[in-house]
Length: 131
Length: 131
Image (tube, rainbow over all chains, first blue to last red; front, top):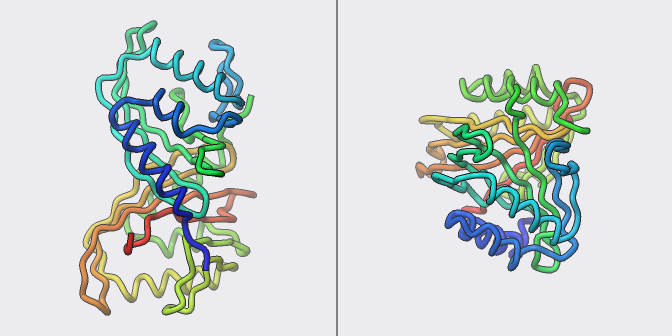
């Protein structure tokens, strides 16, 4: 009889608590493994960001790029939804992209994998804006 | 440059459209592969349902058990959130469990994998009620 691991539930709850307060960098610093793998839906040549990035420094860089280029009007998290050593969180953001000045409501799902008490993989699910 | 496949987006949209109207059995009949694999967070000995079930007949049986044992007051789907050949949908239900008479609000995430234009795997993510 399998179930969600306690560490997946605990890490998921901590991630939601921090991200709900906009403390995304704190979440990376405290909950992410050094060898974290981060997978987007596609790569972003304009930002020199491949679809898959590895290592906590690269993920801190991605977070810094996000923080510098977006004004977050409000953010909300739904979850975590645990299953085995994974959990899903829905992120809901109302942001203005600073370079373009365009304000938009974004919603994406994150699928997180936990090992040794840390997040070792994050995969983001969302519809591309052009759709 | 990878992205969500068109078939994942299309099947996801169809699943959300049908499930939002309560047409879950129709979704199984039209969108699921014969060899569908369905994975819950844990098995359910009381219902004789293992964590992992295979084959469309078994999944129809699970759907029938759900329909017979729950009165659905309202249902809502958020998504789909696509990524590669997968997509995530959040299901929001206000139901009364008929045997116990207990009404509750349930929320769970489904992670679906698409191949050959059909859903070949569904994995459900949720917190156990006892937590």
